[in-house]
Amino acid sequence: MATGQLFSRTTQALFYNYKQLPIQRMLDFDFLCGRETPSVAGIINPGSEGFQKLFFGQEEIAIPVHGSIEAACAAHPTADVFINFASFRSAAASSMSALKQPTIRVVAIIAEGVPESDTKHLIAYARSNNKVVIGPATVGGIQAGAFRIGDTAGTIDNIIACKLYRPGSIGFVSKSGGMSNELYNTIARVTDGIYEGIAIGGDVFPGSTLSDHVLRFNNIPQIKMIVVLGELGGQDEYSLVEALKQGKVNKPVVAWVSGTCARLFKSEVQFGHAGAKSGGELESAQAKNQALKDAGAVVPTSFEAFEASIKEAFDKLFEAGKIESVKEFTPPPIPEDLNTAIKSGKVRAPTHIISTISDDRGEEPCYAGVPMSSIVEQGYGVGDVISLLWFKRSLPRYCTKFIEICIMLCADHGPCVSGAHNTIVTARAGKDLVSSLVSGLLTIGPRFGGAIDDAARYFKDAYDRGLTPYEFVESMKKKGIRVPGIGHRIKRGDNRDKRVELLQEFARTNFPSVKYMEYAVQVETYTLTKANNLVMNVDGAIGSLFLDLLAGSGMFTKPEIDEIVEIGYLNGLFVLARSIGLIGHTFDQKRLKQPLYRHPWEDVLYTK
Image 1 (spheres, rainbow, N blue to C red):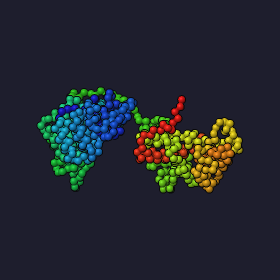
Image 2 (cartoon, rainbow, N blue to C red):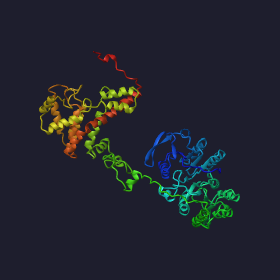
Image 3 (tube, rainbow, N blue to C red):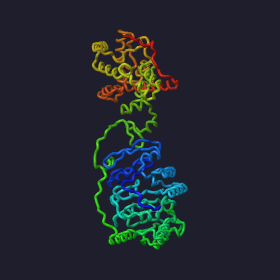
Image 4 (spheres, rainbow, N blue to C red):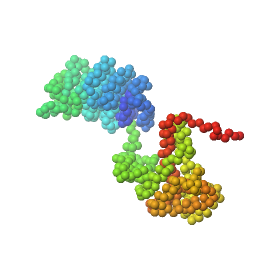
């Protein structure tokens, strides 16, 4: 492996398996370091394409999302680092696919639990093709002031405290990602800071070893001193021992192997990492520390003395003039996310939407304060749900039953009415369900199904003002306005609409008062003296009875009733009901595989 520097200020990566926070942290590090270009060139999310919005400082940027590794590599040929956040199940396969791409030079595998046999295949392929694998089970690595893999070094505050926003003189390599953060702090306290830090991962077979990176650090001129943190288990440290004995490392090495406490246990102990398990005296922390010391590394007497040993080695280099003072600067502040600032009470921001009918922020959605589970457990029906979402209160059972009857009676009125006709024509044109439904709904208005609100509005105004049916009808006639809710193309005085009769029968039996309905019946009696087709239609029946429902239930104030009628609640009932039938007509035409509809010539009057 050897060679030298892995990363620079222009290094770009491909990020596999989209994770918003690690990517944003990489971009925040870029901004902190003063990079001109983001370190994440593209995101790979199998099966997805498009863009993900993230922040580069204060600027919002769109990072391309690719559906495959091959597509991403082709689109970003200069991105030579592959950061793999896949789970242990797919990490090996996706990593191998990345290694086989000619543009990829370094692969970092974050997942723990990757099968050892798969890791061995990755290691063999990488070594034979001069590529580098960091991990598995790694937090990644960092080149101070240049490039960061994922969550390496933790929070921005920690990165600033460790002075990782600018390069120092220390090369650091560890098995543990968590202990890396500790050592970054330690090194920053007693030296000029990290130049490059790598966590190789705690698995038994890491993709690259401690000695691999130490030898690489030895070839990087900016690195003046090397710090190594090993651990008990395995024999990785002995390859470093051999490199030191053979004189392959000519820079000071300060090392410590953790796990000396293992001897205090009577039986063999498995520590946190898969590889942190002593398989005998040779793999003990004491034996490794002694071997490193004998090979020429600076090895303290304990972990507590590690910091002092690092300081002493650094001070000698500095006093000898081998390390120059680093020019310090204040990094730019990372803009705080709005959500974070709001939670901390630093800012206040206006909301963009107000909702009073439902809330999905808790463990389960609530309709007007009623939990979804209660709705099911208490046996609520569709009418009850409408009462909660439309009227923001639980109406009496007779009210919700009336709503359900209206929905059932208005669900469909055959294929010949304008709404159904439009839906059928659209469905036969091959359009989808939503398009077919909407084409039918758009016909609802003053002439088709949309007169419920007007009927309620005019009947209420006339009744409340004390107008007789004669006065009401004649005043409407003088204004040139047809009485909404009165008149039918088919039904007559001697052939009433059955739907109207059923609604009136239910109301007379269950409603406390039907004063508005009775007034509408009196209006109908008068209009029938003018023409036999001026009967009350379903719009008039629903409109007048809804007034009785609202007024008779005692649950609405007069201003609330006026607002409900004005807003268009009652037409909403027809829209909801008729949607059922329009959807049915769509499915019917598609099930029957009906061809494109063309209106017959003989049904058209062609005229000049």
